[in-house]
Image: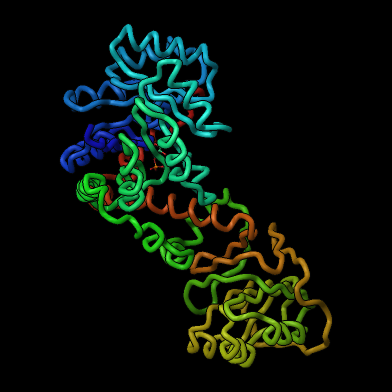
Length: 426
Ligand SMILES: O=C(CO)[C@H](O)[C@H](O)COP(=O)(O)O
C-alpha cells in the first residue's frame, strides 16, 4: 500500500478547519482527521461537514475514546467517520466493543499507543483484539519536552506485522520522510496546519513520504536550535506558554530582545558595588539580574554598560534605577529597569552575587533562563526551558494562522470564532 498522508486538524475553529482541509486536499492529502480539540469544541458536526465536503477522502474521528467504545464508535460512524481512534490504554473490553461496533458500520478502528508503558506488548494485544490500525504517537505535550515517536516506531515495526501502522507526533517534512520508511500512515498536524502555505507544505510532505528510499540523514541537521526558536518567539508567546508565570515586572530601557542565563545580584538602594563585581563574574552570554528593591538611586549606568559589553554579557535587568540612558541607548545595550534616574548611589559592598532573588511575583536563581524584549522580561526555570520554548513556538504558530486570516480580511472575532468561547451558562 502506498504510504498515506493524514492531516490532523487540531484546531478549535470549525470554519478554519474546513478551510485548511480544503487546502490540504489541493496539496494532495490522502486522509483528513478531525482532531480531538476540533471534535471537543465543535462536536461531531466537524466530522459530518468534513465528510460532506470531501466524500472521497477517508475521514478520521480522533475521538481518543477511553470508555464506552461501542457508543462512541457508533456516533462517530453515523456522522460519517471512516476511522475512529480509541486509546490503546483503554480496557480490552472497550477495544473489543469498539471493534465490534465498527464492524457493524463498516468503519475501522485506529488504536492510539500514546502514553502506553510497554508499546510493543500492548500493540500485540491490540492487534489480537482486532484493531485495524496501530498508531505510534507522541502527544503534543510530550513533544514540548523534546520527545518524538521515531524510536518507538522502529520498535513497533520490528515487532508487529500484518497490521497497518500509523505514526504521529510533531512530524515535519524530514521526520515524516524517515517515518515513511516503515509506517503506512503518516499523520501530520502542526507542520501543515500552522504553516504559512498549507497547500505547499502538504504537497512537500506528500512528496517527501513518496521518496523514502533516499537518505534521511538530514533530520538532525534540520532541527532548529534553541537560538533559532528564540528568534521567532516573543515574551508574550512565552508568557502564554507559561501561564503568566515567571514575569519580571520591569520596563525596557534600551536595546533589542535578549536571551541568556541569569547571574543574580542582591544589593541595596544605590549600592552599585556588587552589580559591577558581577560583570567580572558573569560568563559570556549571561544576563545580570539585579534586585535593588526598587530603590530610588541608580545601581547601573554607562560605564558598567561598557564594561559588560567588553565581557560579552547579554544584558542587564534591574529591579531598581538605571541612568545614562542616552549613552546606553547609543550603545544599543539590552537593559531593563523599574525606573530611570540621574542620581547614582555609592559602592558600599552590601548584598551578594549568585543568591536567589525575588522580583515581584518571580523568584530567580542564577542559571535560570531569561528572555526579555520590548514587552518586558520573563525568567524560566532551567528544567523547563525546552518545554517553554517549544510551547511558545507552538503558540506563535497558532497566532500566525489567525494573523494570516486577518490579513485576508477576516475580523479577529470571526477568525477565532470568539462567541463560541462565551460562557453560555450565564
Ligand atoms: O492527536 C494529536 C495530539 O494528541 C495530533 O493530531 C497529532 O499529534 C498530530 O499533530 P502534530 O503533528 O502537531 O503532533
